Amino acid sequence: MKVAQKSVGLVTEAEMFTHLAEKFTSSNRPVFDYAIVDEAQDISISQLRCIAALGNYSGQDHSCRFGAAG
Image 1 (cartoon, rainbow, N blue to C red):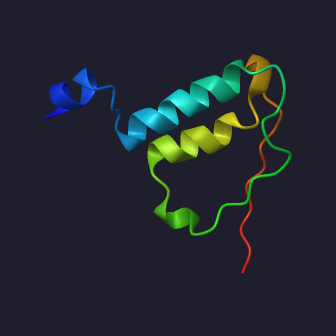
Image 2 (tube, rainbow, N blue to C red; image 1 turned 180 degrees about the vertical axis):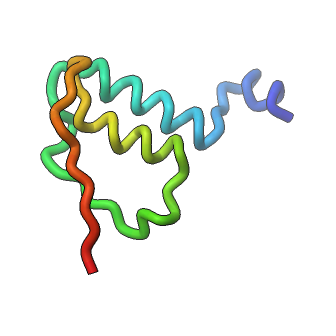
């Protein structure tokens, strides 16, 4: 099944978030000013890495802050 996905250019959800995190990290400027995450307890590891990469543009840490409300 996975070979068939690759042969037509499909990726898994985890691969998609991994690719996004790599793009965010290699960017020269922030992609977003803010990111709001709802239902954070349901985030996968690849999704969390992608969110963390939002504050790591140009290969430098620009301090993503995580907090909880409610």
